[in-house]
Image 1 (cartoon, rainbow, N blue to C red):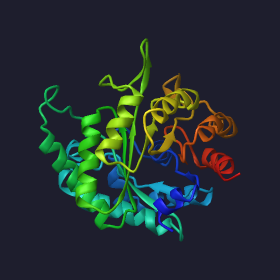
Image 2: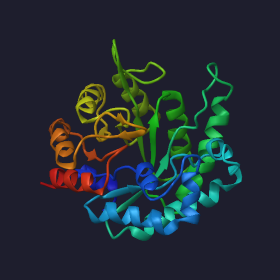
Image 3: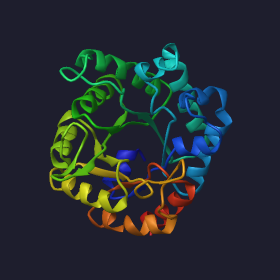
Length: 291
């Protein structure tokens, strides 16, 4: 069955966990380009995908979070968009078995749209189109627009995916708590974001990063009250703490899974993890989801 058929049947699915912190544990240094590892360290990337599939994940994301031309140009690699994204999909598919899916990760460009920045909507759309076409042509089943703080930037990525590929589109925003509640960096609350992502054409919407499981429950509750779309949640392994010079995500695997039960109870259909999560965390989440 396709992923949409499985969701329509009522099935709950398990997304994978962190890629960046896993690569760092394997030797990715500060200032290194993670997407370049799809070519130079393909075996390492494949092993991470295999570990997530082996622990019970239904979906893994490609190592392409910063695989757009704007981000890659900061490493002097702007001409490698197609090769890095295609290699990333190949790495993920080589680890996948039947009924396991590959999601092409599409993160933010790091630039602001007009009037807050100098990038036009048309330029942003083209940046995303280039990356998303490479992911889709290499065989990605899903385009996952993630960790977005600007709804308009997310809409550009969704539009690029819907107009240029047949892929299912996931869209996920990042929220932080302030004195007025939860908002993105640009000031958008979860309910408003949910409606905007749905109207833009995303098949499944939700939130990732920025929050631990406790905060994610509150965020997804607000989103669920504003939309009829399928929902996804990928919290961090707790809120980060600094130990010396090292950032630590404190939630242990069983604790993280236990705190995600309310997300299942409210009808969230795809659960995974973000920063600090490992295959051990996802193994416990898979037990919860598949119970």
